[in-house]
Image (tube, rainbow, N blue to C red; front, side):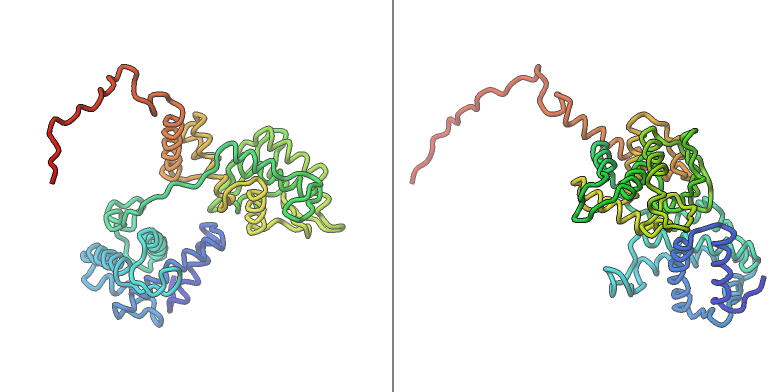
Length: 370
């Protein structure tokens, strides 16, 4: 494979991400955006690849094959330092400041690893252990970010949200038809009841459902498919929607394979699903900021609280590694501590056998007067 400019290289890389790796268009866009600082860094090092993309390989091999590993280490080390301390930000809430947050640096490094594996695979860059999956050397250069616990709702709050859509009831100043209410109830049921990503819910087709087996086929990240069980309540809500609701949303002569139909009869978009969750969160009296991924986080946490095995939850969520699922165990521990402090008698009052303090002894010193 030969490429003459960075533009041609990135165009070929984009096709690789979408065609070979099966990434969604938004994920591909984010990967390419996170690569922009790297080419900016190369320019700061007087390595301009805009006219000749092969200049990067010559730079890495400038000291021969035996120096490749050392050049890669120096490149990654200095790039991370530049991101953390020297790069001037041009957008976002910290525009004008210098230095990325650690989480941003981790994203840039993930994008860089993906690019170099592509370059190595196509003979555009020399290989080195630093680009191997799970490379210990790369971990040494990757800053550790503070991992925030996912945002969740309680089981009671989730139930209120799921039951918020009601047929023929005025909600937020807008009359909800029976068809829309049935659709929204089925949508909320499957988001919380099966832990779907919002993109997975938007991509569902009618043929993905098996109400007899109570399962749904999910197409997740990287176009990987998995079978997820549907709860009894979710199955009933979906059955009601398919029997009497969906046909009312499809316009005459219009057909759609999408499971959840919009007002116009087309497939519901990701933005429409997000707006639907926000609207019913307000109806249910929940706090601001509840979104579809809140329900996914809550689904995983409530499964673990109920005694589900971590590996099973990993499979249900479609995570490729256990580390992505382990964060929910921390939430369960936090929730366990909260319940203990609120419910256990010894968590709030001293033990009965603890001796009581006697009366405070009066001081024998006399007060001095002036």
